Image (cartoon, helix red, strand yellow):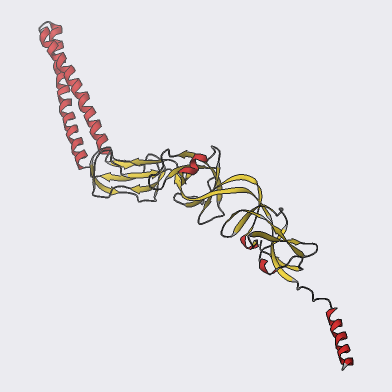
Length: 353
């Protein structure tokens, strides 16, 4: 029995001297710490609009007879946009032309009478008073003739005003009237936008506007084609904030105007400011335990990991910005941070970026 106990003790002693099994090599995903030297101050939605727009109206009153173009149509200078019922203007022109014919006849008669009285006076058989009357009638008829001609020109202009034409190449963006509607002189009828000069239009928070530098730059991207981008600067900011939204409308001059930036294109405008270089990582890289925030830093030579505390400046839904703790270029574990131990061997299966 004693011999059995001794043998058992020897066997147990031999087992306790065996080295512990090595930690398993864990495959991990990793990222390289990237520098971030821009601070995002906001992202705003807006539209591409024409810098110059004009709202046209008829110079005379009347009933809309026809709309010649629709919203979205391109027009050239002189193209017909709409017409009024020209009946009143045509009647006025015919009346003026009749008055002109009557005054012309009076003018011809006055001229003939003045010539007769002048001939009689030259032969010594005519009275000076009769000649003076004839010459006065001639001048009066001449003035009436000029007045009648001006009235005809005016009536012809009024008839021409019954047609509304574009004064420059443009795109029709809005109609305020319909065919059959009666409009007054000067009433807004159609809005035209010049497509050659475009700008970005956004609404900015009133508080942010007060802190913007005069030379601040915005990045403008198409919402449907985010790869289409350009830079822009502030051209104009409305002086008064909207009472409902507390925003002020800003108009931005584009550095370039890509062909994809058509009138009405929905855009996304990003405002950023230069900051001290900081490190940006995926949010999944953080290990938060006992009130401390750390990341796993990879020793690429030894293929091991070590835990390092970091300072978090800001975080979003997917990323985190660090103020200290990680140097630009270091490789950081980006997934599975809760299953690692300091000094553990790892295998780089891939990178998340």
